[in-house]
Amino acid sequence: MEITEDGGPQHFSRLQEDLIFIKILTRLPVKTLIRFQLVCKKWRSLISSPEFAKWHVDCATSNPFAPLRYCFFVKSPHSLMMLDCAKCDDDDVVGVDAGDSDVEGWIELDDDLRSEIGFKFLKLIGSCNGLLCFATYRAIIGTGDYMCKRSRLYIYNPSTHQHFAVSNPLEGVGNISACGFGYLSSSDDYAIVVVGESKGAFYMFSLNSIEWTMLKWCNSEGISGRGVMVDGKLHWFVVRVLPEQQQPSVQIQCILAVDLGAESYEEVAPPIPKLNECSTLCVVGRRLCVWTADMMVGEMWMLKDYGLWDSWTQLFSLNLMLPELPSSPCQNCFGFTETGKAIVQCGDKLLLVDRDRNRNPPKHHNKHASLVVEGVLDDSAMSYVESLVSPFPAAPSPKRGNELKQARALPGLIGAE
Image 1: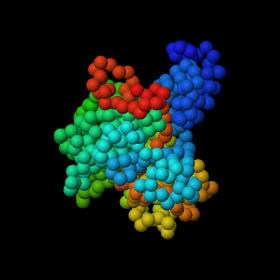
Image 2: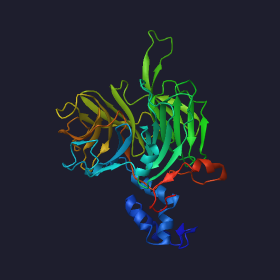
Image 3: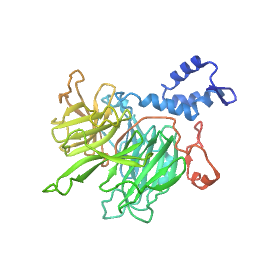
């Protein structure tokens, strides 16, 4: 389509010229694009359109081997921070405590959103297409629950400073034992999933309809922690017991893939028969990956062709027997810096681990590790890609009036509501 001066969309009359223009713009950072909206009405109409936001995030996430730019994590139980990974290779940033917010490269939660949240505890649920989903809750003393009662959910775009608040379907009923967040391409929708402690308490929130739906068709047994979304399906590690005729009974670990659009699920084998003590599902360039590690070696596996469960490929392995690494296992790997250093989490620390990319097949031959930050809570860290994607429902209606009152955005940004 052609974007005219009055902002109305039409079919492209100069397709080649406009496509080249869009191709250039989709490679620019969000801050630059926000400034470009002030150039003219045509640029504002183009850059603020939902179609452009999709093109921009597609460009940023299409390459699974692109360097990781940002990483979010929870510091102290009450605040989020964002690490600019492009600055991780700078020795001046190495060895930073998570409480030090004055160091260049750290971006704290917006003041308006922090004021709205208050001193509630935070838990990251997921990151997708530039949107971050997290929960706020009040701690119940003496419990070790994943999330507690009186929690609230937020969909937040840190790049545009917009956020949308969502009620908790388990309010007054019980705690959240598992959750997930992601994009459903089949319906062009974003979904939040929460799983309660009681059997059958499996709920999905649709951003388009602003409604919670109970999913009665899914086997939620054994689901816990944070799921990851790939190809419209949420994935968790679960443990299953083989048929009773097996004596003694044998437990196996498998991947539960829940298709939210087709209302179906399947249980599939992980890339290796026996996962190590630290195994995590993650997403790299929109592809499902498994990070598995013990005290000696960490391995990253990628599913090259989704749905073909025999297409697991080992991307690399890392030697974790290094004096610079802490004694706790590395429970996750988020990606790489521009110089090829792996970003891993070991306990409450984020570290850079050098690796040699010139060996094939990959072997654990990295040189050394260096501390980036410490003070990271639990499994809170996750990768993040900046975008212009809106956290608000696509088309407001009178039915949604009360829900939309919960939405807030910082003033002063183009397109902020």
